[in-house]
Length: 304
Image 1 (cartoon, rainbow, N blue to C red):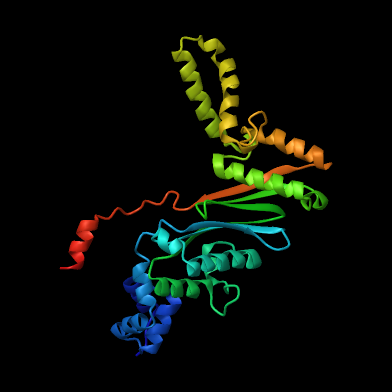
Image 2 (cartoon, rainbow, N blue to C red):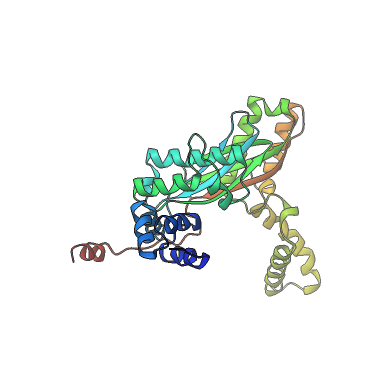
């Protein structure tokens, strides 16, 4: 029995499986929809899809740099429970995903899923489905960012937060242990304080104008003349930048220095120049609405 593209789309709608998997199922079932669904269930694909509907808000944020030290990745992979996040098989899957991103440089998540997973004969998508079935929970590769150049990675609290920072400096300085310690400290700063922007230039103009409007309103409400409010606003805006911009923040390990001053001091000590040019910070489950189950109701539903 022949089948059409509409049949493939309909099967995908019913099962949630990938287009190619649905096409193979229909081909193997001579176009019979029910038989194709059974085929997907037998292959375990439909079961994996069913699990994919469950909320995955645990997991890990993982950051790593290759052996050469010139490519790094920050990646978040989610699971349903913290118990699975600590599972060695899950953690190894996360590492495989990170290594694949480092080596193959996929453009986005869809491209990553089609990459051949490092050290295996499977695509990342196929390996992901295998892990969903063997581990028994929904697992989702949520996001990643890859950087090339002088990079430093830091993982906080066993995967609660993953940070990757990129620097502009010379190879000889980057190779020094003192620089590596400095770079780790900057990554720890990002993990601890969670800056919203790299520097003042990175803050969108509309964000600055919004903050200025709020500050001006506060000053006028304090009884200050509107004529001098603008000057006061510019002064207070500096405090705002110190809170949200990484290089302007107070360095967590020395309250007498800003991050930029710490960077300049390190560069002078090592006899060269250092600049922080980019960073990314992923916190596991950030922004994901967790499902709240009623335990008593869950047990009751199981024994019905």
